[in-house]
Image 1 (cartoon, one colour):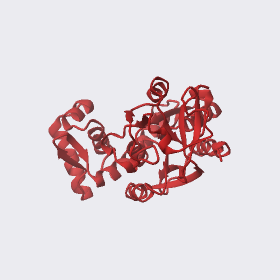
Image 2 (image 1 turned 135 degrees about the vertical axis):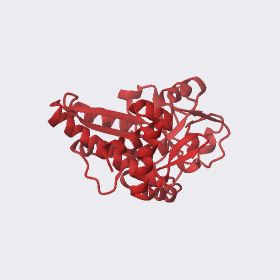
Image 3 (image 1 turned 120 degrees about the horizontal axis):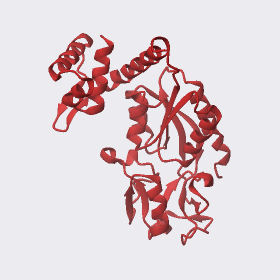
Image 4 (image 1 turned 30 degrees about the horizontal axis):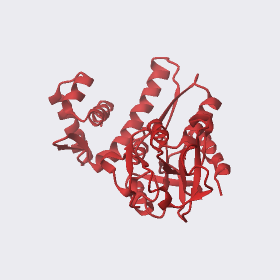
Length: 303
């Protein structure tokens, strides 16, 4: 096994094409294919599967590439510091479902550590991508929720990907809406009260299963649903169409502004906010501080 082979595997996985990877790596496609085949024979596993949509990682390949990325990144750090004599910034990345409070915790972490010595990345994404990012070492931490409905399915997926989930705090369910919404002044609403208004839901793509929904009560027979891909669009639809989404009730007016509110849903449902990490991996000091900042929102959870 060589460092070059690891880099080839990573590039093929990232591009989904042997041809594209060979161009990126400035090597002929036959040479690249031969190097990967030799590595597969040495490992005794198949890393890639050819489909009509291109080349995708096998389950064993997904596990392998996570470690490959870590090895290559560590080598690049050593090369930059001791061979190229460059000043290398430490890297921290976090992936999350669309939670304003998780972004605020990230902002607080960046402000505390500064950007002179550290390089930061934040990814708000679909549930499956959050899991994949942590499994493949693209992010050190993943932030999402579990509840009684999705727990078994997601924990099975965590186990298969070599991940562990750490709960931080429990939340009741709230309807998040703009302050001009007809129900905004209510102290509590029933799910049926929301039927005349569109539920705003984050599109989960190929994993558009009830278990991967970012909104709890995903199996309820909603009369009106609008799918969107980003939080800014959802906020616009709240104003334009009196839409709403279901959330933890934690409000971050400093980021979303003061035009929105959370109304308690009359439901016994509980969502548990927590973070994902790779099993047996030691968290960096930045990750530990981010988790501390994230956990601080426990005090803002509404009763």
